[in-house]
Image (cartoon, rainbow, N blue to C red; front, top):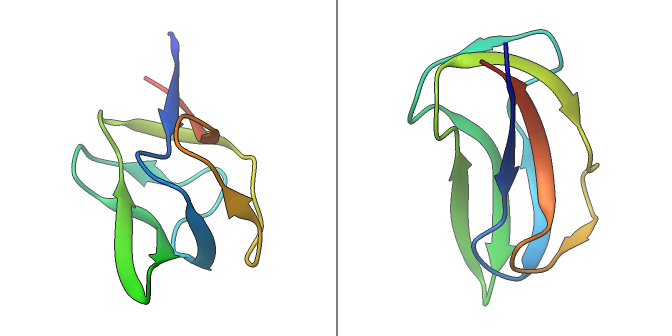
Length: 73
């Protein structure tokens, strides 16, 4: 089992966290929604796995490359 970091692809505010720790997710599932420049942009899982840790909370600011979620695949 390997840990996979899911990183933000842009700078934005964490508007809503959709998934929770312990959830099983598939590639392409929405994990959280970022708000950037008045647009809602989903942050999706890059792999199948179990969410090990959500490193952000609603209202946090993520920068490009920041790790938001850690999956165990």
